[in-house]
Length: 303
Length: 254
Image 1: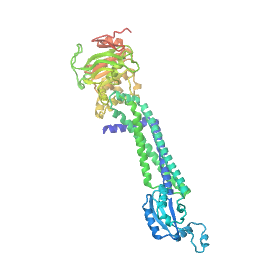
Image 2 (image 1 turned 180 degrees about the vertical axis):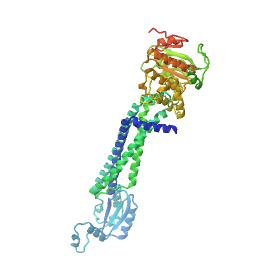
Image 3 (image 1 turned 30 degrees about the vertical axis):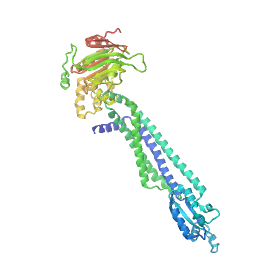
Image 4 (image 1 turned 90 degrees about the vertical axis):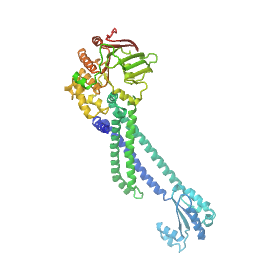
């Protein structure tokens, strides 16, 4: 325990002794973690956005006006059992008309229909895993019941709609966005590790005379390593806390403005997610600081 | 001063004029060291000798004769290519790496270039040696002033190394080497940077330390000093042990 306080004393003295390298190290950690943090928050917001867009993907299977209601109910039961399906609903012809009335910008068209209803009834399938949309649609078409109730007996596939083309394109884009985000964060962590390793190596280089004397008088390796590891950890702690502080300031200042400028996107991510990001930043900072200084120490501790 | 130290250090009864008996502190058993850079020219070639507790001896030889290799083998900075080295019954060739710091706590080292830390005071420089082996503040507060009094620097506690003369700096480095009371003190050219009169003072100090029972080994070029002191002399020439005599002289033509 007494050596813990010795390490602490020495590492705090290291701050005043090598003020410029100390500041360099802290600023490096701070900037790296800030950039990583910005990407993490940005990635989370984009991920959140992408999920909310993906969740709007659903399948509409149109059924004929004279279809047997018992067959439709049985078909809906089968669809409920399929993988990736969250819920199955039924829209009657009247509801379809109401929905159309609500969404169209020109309600006069409906009045011109003279009480006729050209819209078909449909089975609406919500998906728990939007990526499975194509396989669910295929399974619906493959059932023995659907061709009997479909609105288009000549080609049932034409009566199952899920925006085939646009869905495929959307998933291609969202997956790219995710991969690029992960690759960028990995690259940034690597850069931070290299920078910190280098900075701490400089700090050790500045004190190699002390290390040589410590070895000469028989200080154990743990004792020599202690103050440097402590110093690396302290730099990382200060740097990561600064990064978290600036991120929090950015979040409270910038996100509401962007949200105000882009009201149709939902940018709000709950506070728990932010807490996880902040904690992992501090944790990553500590790991980077300790690993970086341990790595930089290695060659000075060969007996 | 010497009497104060002899109260605090274990005094071994050693007859300085006759060959000491008992178990040797240091044993070299057919030691050969070949550096990979010079495979055909061994730095030490089949050297065997014994050094006993309480001895005061000189290690002489030209540059490149193997003196530094001898000292680096003793502190286990390097391992011999062949042969065995024992320090206080411990075999250095099979010693585990983690034990090496504990070996070095029993060997004080003094160098030609002092190796003092310029940003620490005299007191802090000496205290540093105790701090880093985990001694308590109480031990530091009693032992450091005591050892500085022994080397005659009680007044310079708060000076920085660059405010001291070369001889005073070497006294600080000797104080640092013996503050932990090691049984063995190794000096590599301790007077190499000092004028003859200052050197004489340093040698007196080393003799005084030796009288308290510490074994003192001095590697040196200083012909006059070796001739004056008439102590045991070990001579190395191109890696070979050429001479080992009690009360010897430097003996090389300069």
